[in-house]
Amino acid sequence: MSARTRVAVTGASGFCGGHVARTAAARGAEVVCVGRRPGPVGEHRFWDAARGGPDLAGVDLVVHCAAAVGDPAPGSAAGARMRAVNVDGTRRLLDAAGGAGGLPVVWVSSASVYDPRRDRSLVGEDHPRTGHLNAYGRTKAEGEALALAGGAVVLRPRAVYGPGDTQLLPRLLSRVRAGVLALPGPDVRLSLTAVENLADACLAAAGWPPGAYNVADAEPYARDAAVKQVLRAHGVRARIRHLPLPLAGTVARAAEALARLTGSEPALSRYAVDQLAHPVVLDLSRARGRSWVPRRTLSDYLASLR
Image (tube, rainbow, N blue to C red; front, side):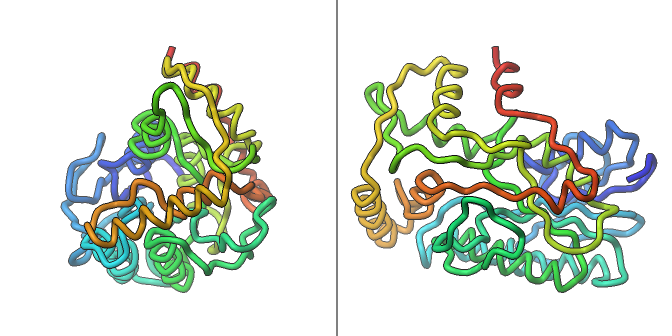
């Protein structure tokens, strides 16, 4: 991306999109924030990703960060909206961008697209993308399939954290009960993604060949040690206890059954258990081969909180 490039960032009022918009502006780009609410910088063009198509007139690059996130109950209104945004919204965005041969599109996906039934101790981009445990994984996989068919660059981060995060670390901290944080299964190695590393990849990827690329911090983290760091940095005194995996699965299935009756998000889901209980390490070779280097770490972020 060169200076004075006109970059459209969808979802720029959100966590990831906001960081992409600010990073692009800091590098001299003209930023067009496309979404329901204005972004942190640049021009605002209204677009509800669940309806209609965005106005992309006059832009040189599209970074699509807009997404419906969460872990909705099957058959719920939230699940229906997730499909409207993550799948149908992608189709409308690609139509507006002109498809293959039109505007370059960088589409932010998720490592949640990867099949949780297969070994993920080192996950390459060719790992199967089936067997999803919730609507988020399914709709992101369907949306990115459209993006790949349309000639986009697709980025697959895992567990994005950093300033402004409203999902990953806040949810983890909310699980502390009576000075105890129960984690499913034994300690495992996990890839995490600093939002600054993701934003850098989003802008660098404008020059990459179309296709899928994993993005994450340079090295995976030992789960328990990383969680202890997070707790200390937030001033939370809690002991980690390991919940047997079969018990965690039973509790998750019961919570999901209750959520189906109420239409609310389950207190614990099989997806949440899976994300914490099994090693998931992303192979970054493909992105590194494009000279991308992830520089930010979890320790950097936690040090900034002091």
